[in-house]
Image (cartoon, rainbow, N blue to C red; front, side, top):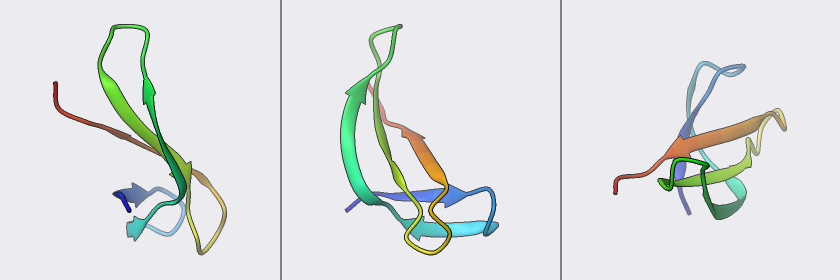
Length: 47
């Protein structure tokens, strides 16, 4: 599981339904939802 910052909860959470995506510029990122409030979360990964 990937960990990302939730803007609504204002703390780091483990992402639910995390999946790896590729952004337009070619970099990889993890996209998922906050398990507490359900807000969409996004974490940009290294190259």
